Image 1 (cartoon, rainbow, N blue to C red):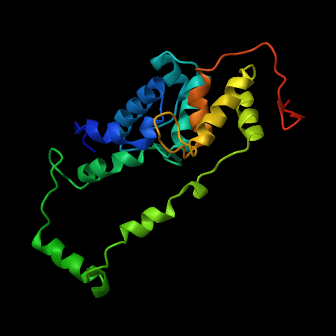
Image 2: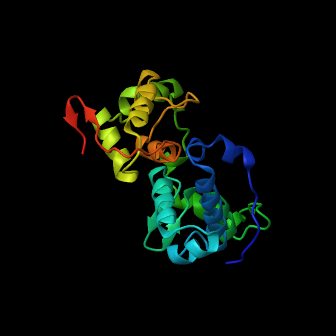
Image 3: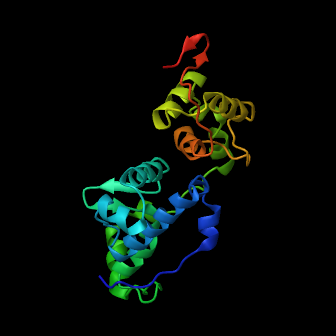
Length: 217
């Protein structure tokens, strides 16, 4: 497969809710993985040790970023390696013999074969989806909201000496805001969001904390 250049769309990147959840270092690795995917037909061999040396990060840090990207559905891990869904539309054009990203016109023979392969029912006009109904289905009840105890326990797993009062305050601020962050964005994956937040929270010498009169340790 020819290793062609590809078009970059800053607007799509900037408007992506998943990318919005990433820290600067997470965005950097994700951007590198996109380049690898485009060069390797979306079958990037995972080599964390090499990436750690190449990008000047620890193995643990690379692994944690990959977990975050996977939780946000930005990457997938398959038998062929690391797969990035957003790269597929451009790669399909390349696989189909496109030139410079322009889709080649189908021949008359290919059109006839396509008509024969498709059942008549599939060529009929389909009803338009009801956008209003689909929007109604997305509500706060469908978003996973943990208890305060679960929230703090997960924070301590990732950062054992984290100041748990700050963690509790963060939880309460999201909860009173209908489970939205400071940018008024719905928190769809609280674990990933909390991981990004922990780096900004202080540590404390004490690791004892009480939630609903039950010690969390």
